[in-house]
Figure 1 (cartoon, rainbow, N blue to C red):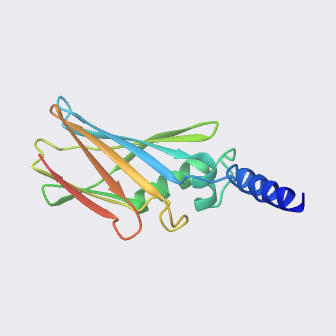
Figure 2: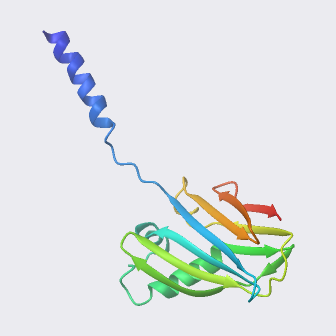
Length: 156
């Protein structure tokens, strides 16, 4: 009888452990090339609590958008055909557990190589993974970034 209780106790422990909370750290960025305006438009989706923890400001405060802008400018770099491009923050939106960040870079007439440095949330969360999906003239490319792999390049 003691053996059955012991075994059932162990099994119960393992079943309960399978329900342990695991936080997933990721961001997703979509890059679209707008041929008419020769612009790359970026839309980044992040977890509200994660970005709030990283910039140390409540998302419901007035200065949140300004801090997000500063954070993105310091943690996301774009190089088109080897030349650095200036990114322009165009806005952000908090929607529950998600923060959407919008930015762009102009003067992009043709892309043979696109190099991105993406360190968003990497210093705050060691297991952070950042995905970037690029749509350029009918071609789709995906990059992933994590600690130790902060820079990635694709060719078109």
